[in-house]
Image (cartoon, rainbow, N blue to C red):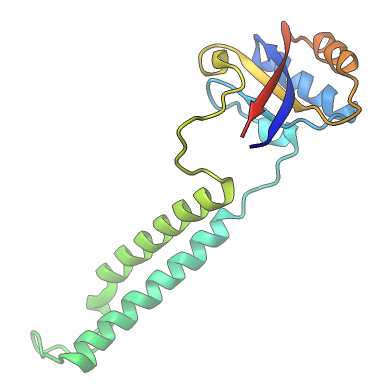
Amino acid sequence: MTSKKYILGVFNDEDVLLNAIEKTRAAGTKIYDVFSPYPIHGIDDVLGIQRSRLPIVAFFCGLCGTSFALWMQIYMLGFDWPMIIGGKPHIALPSFIPVTFELTVLFAAFGMVITFFIISGLRPTLKVPVMDVRSTDDKYVMAIELKEGTDISKLNDLLRSNGAIEVNEKEVVK
């Protein structure tokens, strides 16, 4: 098991937090993560998080779903067990639209969920590391990973000067 140390800045207001993130990044400090009780509009841009590539995965999974649906229906109704239903030809594409649409959506949805879980590293665990319990209720927490040679007093002063009401140090075992 590895353990990492973090310094946590606790904030009361989201506007103060956004301002503190900008100033902390401008000072050259790398922010590990920010925790809040609800999504904050614009925090991704302030943190410098790049746009997700998940829509690209959704497109290709949907394309696989479309291809599979068409192949399955053409094979089953055209080659494996050809039946004339209502005088239609064996391969009647307009009648394939509902099944094709449903499998496209199904493949895209499951593909996105599976990809999201793999990329983000979310998996079932017995103990979830929580930086500060109050971040699920009414506080905003900025976590900065402490590396070797990091001046803790300098980080403490930086966070307090940017509006942190409390600065704590926490060790997380993963």
